[in-house]
Image 1 (cartoon, rainbow, N blue to C red):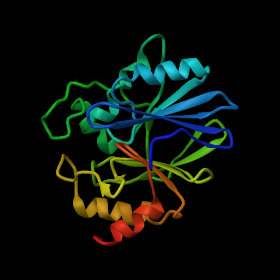
Image 2: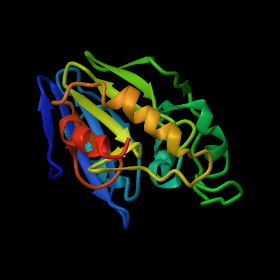
Image 3: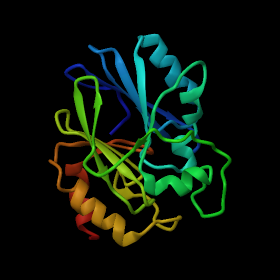
Length: 218
């Protein structure tokens, strides 16, 4: 599925794809409340801040799916130009954040992410305006990988846990093939088929499209 703006009632999704790895940064806004969050601040993040300013939305949070450098590259903008935007990250990815985004232990990428104000837990509820999102802890790509699920809209932001007909690498720090398989089976494939999946890279997909694909392997 191509990257397109999506809407559900007053909830609006603006995807921005940047960088050599086709990273997806998502602005999710309640257009009635005029507030938004950013999920995964990647390269050329000024595109996102310009869009937020142009729409007149109040940026209330940066939600990271995990702490690899290409997903936190724009996190510094949460603390610039007078901003103090709270960052949400699962604590199991703190070693990666402290290590400046390196995907391998001892390998710094030099990307500094301010300390998170929100320590995510499985099942935690977050809000964008009037819309509820549930945090799903989905380790396997990294120890603290999470997905954000809005049941009302049928939207899942999967980070690098699930892509179109693929899943994230498991050969990096804290990665595990058996763990990512469990995360996909118990947290993602249990969702309704019509759930749209917005991954950390490349094209959109859905639970219904991925169920038979992953069923071939595990």
